[in-house]
Image (cartoon, rainbow, N blue to C red; front, side, top):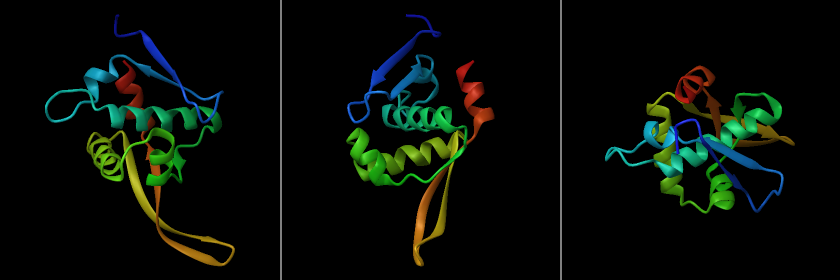
Length: 122
């Protein structure tokens, strides 16, 4: 399988949702031991999928979103997000949001770095 081949995985929670991951990501997005960082690859693929739907680069996604959709633990998700942030592929931003006159502190937003992701695809 060459580096331009893509693997598609259908999500059971949404029959129309497909994450397409270029195979070179398994060599580019790695942990300290140079093994593929499957949690980070899954998170990055999902954020890119969401970007392709509506074109925005900021997403209000919490740990619970990835826990319920991909069955990863909170620490797995947090550590993967830290590694993605160190790679400059995305950034976490914690904000206070107000909904119906209620304030929610430390709501996590993920900001996708499209220029860095496009370098990753090459």
